[in-house]
Structure formats: structure tokens, C-alpha cells
Length: 376
Image (cartoon, rainbow, N blue to C red):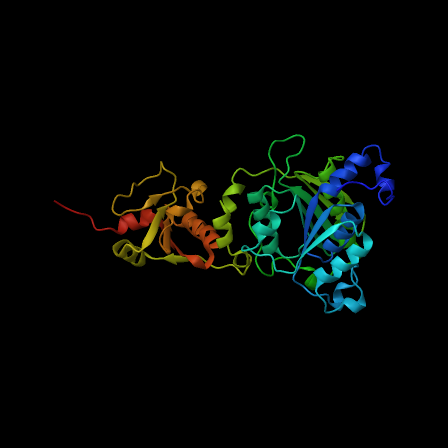
């Protein structure tokens, strides 16, 4: 796709010396996927299309409701009840018929995310629920796709760019460096519960479009490894540096197969308590041989356990070899039962309903004391 000599559509931005026709050409060749055609997605889509991004993808399975209209300004009253992707595509083509619009009227999930995201250069996350945010983040990490993130809550909004190193670092942060574990149901109120002024997603969504344009055209300093926060009530803004955490990658599925098996809805559901078991139940698992038993203590810790077969995987390496957890039942233990309970909770979050996780209550030291002594 090239710029038409007879088309003055992009005249004002190509006159910018730092942007020029070279910047416009980069936009025309770019493919940007916007996930969520709601409060954040609508302004992002409008300005990306108006700026001349060559291909725009829209993912949303929702329909327009009357409560959307105060902030989702791509739609009108006549659109209520219609699919958002259809209404958005129609409005955007009227805005700029030169842009190729690809609609995905589907709920993004682990079965379709990798195939959809793989066809685009930059992903813009305009969603409003944590399960989808973590899903999008993990998919972008696996595919090495730049991710423009934005979120709003009442009178405050934030945005960042993930999976792109900044000028001072070779490492790129991702959403889990900011929020390693998903909040559970009810811990953070969404817009439907807490409310939002319609102009706030308009401001943040427009800034998300701006960050995507800067990324594509190498203009200025995008918000890589930074979190930008804006308060509508007092116009205060601030930036935080996001430092990549050493073990964040252990929280992300290791490959496409693991990603497709991850239940993100379950990860963000109400917390499920890992089951603690007593010595009697622990001994039954040993005798039956129907569980993967794992010692999560450090390798130097005593006492050594030679009475039954088990794996020795310290907490830091718990997610490095997921193939080791072969059985449907997994039993973890540590010295006193505290670390093993935490490990069991982490494994429960990862495996969801696929496996049943247990922790030995009071730890292996207590188990050792309860074993009968042998005399000669």
C-alpha cells in the first residue's frame, strides 16, 4: 500500500518533519489488532483508522447496549442490539475507506487467541476483565507481539507498552511484571459496578492509539517498561518504571499447548483453597502410588527422605518442568507445611480442574517423627 499523490487525507501529519511520508508509509503497511470495541477500543479504533493504519482487526463478541453510548462513541441509538464489530466496521469504513477492516465477532479464548494474534504486528488491549487481560498478555509473550495496554477505574486511567524493551534496557516487561497474579472475583470493581465518566476511556483510548502509532513509526519515546497514570479529577499524571521480575516467565505457559490448556476464567474466579491432608491420607497416597509426590524444600534441607519415591523440586523451579507432574493427583510437602501450601495454591491456579493438588499439613518433619522406629 502506498500514499496516493491525489489524496490529501494525511497531509497534516506528513508535514511533520519527524513523521513525514516515511512515517505514513509505515502506518499504511502496519497491521493492528484491537481487542474489545468498547470504551477504550472505540477511540483507539477511530484514531488508528483516521491515521491510516493499513489493516485493523477488531475482536469483540458483544452487542451494543444503551448503557454503552455515553462512552462508546462509535455507536448510536439505532445500533442498540446489533453486534459491535459490525457497527464499528461500518462506521470506521465511512471514516476511512482505504483501511482494511477485519472483524472477529468471537470471544477471545485459548483456542483462537494465538491464531488471531499471529496475523498482526501490534495488539491493543481494550478489554475490561482480568481473565482476558492475562490471556492476551500471555499470548503476546508467546508470540513476541508488542502489547499496548490500557485500563480505567472510576476517575483514573493507566496505560503501558509490554514486550518491547526501552532504550535503557534489553529486557521487556509484560503485564505479569506489574500484576503477577490475577485478582479474584470481587476484589476489583469493574466499570459496571464502580461507574466511569465517559470522557475518561476516551482520553486513555486515544493515548493508546498514540502509543501504537509511536511504536509503528519509531516516533518519540513510547511507554516501554513504564506505567503512565492519569487522574481526571485533578489532571495529575505520573510515570512508574516497570522492572521485569526474574521469575515472571514461570507464571506464563511455556508453549502453545500449555497456553491452550490454561483456564484463565478459573484463575480469576473465587479463590480455591488448596487441600491440606493429614499423615494418614499422605501415607495412603504413598501406598497406592497414584500421586506425584513433590518435595519443594531447598536441596540442602534435612532430613533426607528415602522412605518413598518422590520428586525434589524447590519452589523457584516449580514450573520449569511441568511434564514431571504426570499423575492426576499431586501431593507437595515441605519442612513445616507452609511453603507446600503456597506451592499447592500456585499449582492449583495453573492446572485448574485438570489436576487435584494436596499439601501435607504440618510438613515432612512432623511426618518423620510419626514414623515407627526400627530396632535390631
